[in-house]
Image 1 (cartoon, rainbow, N blue to C red):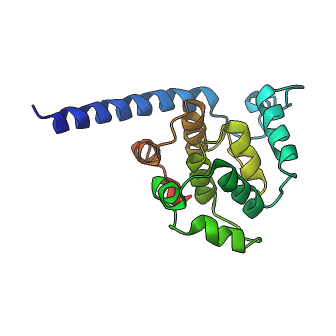
Image 2 (image 1 turned 30 degrees about the vertical axis):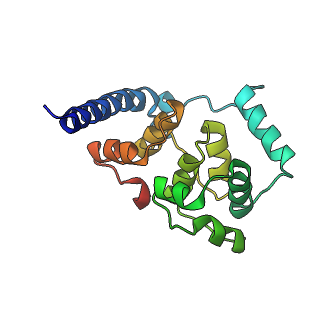
Length: 177
């Protein structure tokens, strides 16, 4: 048996485990948003959350950027990564970040925002904050959103793994959101 075959089998097994685990995550967190009192859930924020506090502090330390373009440009300059490698990693146009810095009023698709979050390996609070600035959110009533959240929670920022799991559940791939 070749090393290549063994590597493929390990990757397939890992992806099958991701499908299984994300399925459980979806079952636990999925909420149907209806007027039925039995389906209501508590949406009150915790008084203090260290991750949220850290996220708020980051924004304050960087001059409270509030547009998508400003926030992403700030992340890009802070992480100081190679633009082409970063774009390749998450299937964005090679000049995405330079073009973004020139267009301050750019409004991306939800899938694009998620890919940027994966590129910078943002945690859940940082992802929520970036999504919120362009009027998107990760919902507990959208299975694809819960799968994205699962990947962020387990720190798996591999777009191909995410697309594999989304496809396994017959959901749109990340670039189709």
